Image 1 (cartoon, rainbow, N blue to C red):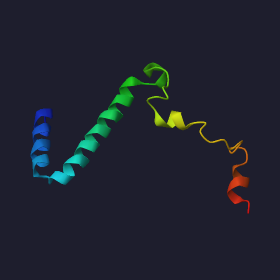
Image 2 (image 1 turned 135 degrees about the horizontal axis):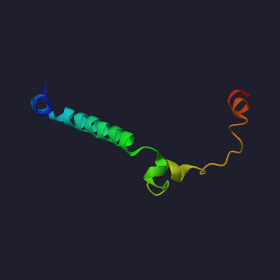
Image 3 (image 1 turned 135 degrees about the vertical axis):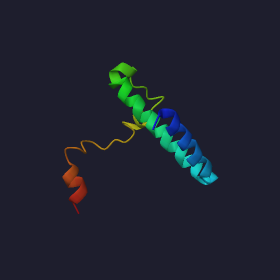
Length: 80
């Protein structure tokens, strides 16, 4: 099937979906675009420095002071 044929088939199938399913289709297409973007851009170094203003996880890092959890994880998890 040609790319044009695939697009036409997709549009025809999307037209059959109820409205509440359209958001799921849009989410999936967005995910595929994001996934494709990751492959084409390569490593994070090529994308520039990490920016805590744009990444909520980076803003959170260091937000909790707990000491050396990685070194004492067994004690933290299994001590009574």
